[in-house]
Length: 152
Image (cartoon, rainbow, N blue to C red):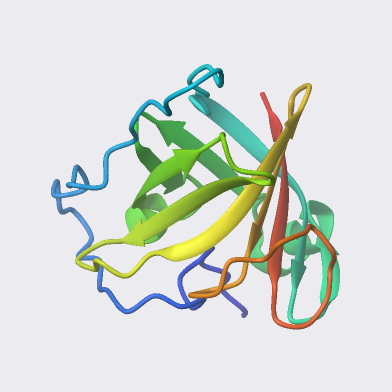
């Protein structure tokens, strides 16, 4: 059986202890200055597809392997892999004033972020992560991890 824990192996360095309530951190989202209004990702999302290990995988493929679909929840400044409990819980900080918009995910117990970019189109959220190196586009190439989510 293959277990997929989102973001867990891409440039992290921290450990997460299941059951910990220490998911609130110094990495809280801040409102950007200027003309960009605050962006909220708050809500529950279904994973439509992912680019992982240099290939696209659909949620149907994942369900066939894992026995369940992947789901992500954003709550405040915390992202939770709702499919597997708190294993994928991490805080994040967004900067929508950048082009493309930037988001940094902080694994539990780590001050080293997983650097990513994001875009929101209607109810679809696309995240593209490159570990410690932030991608500059959403091209599926090399070692990037792309996740396409649909808000429920």
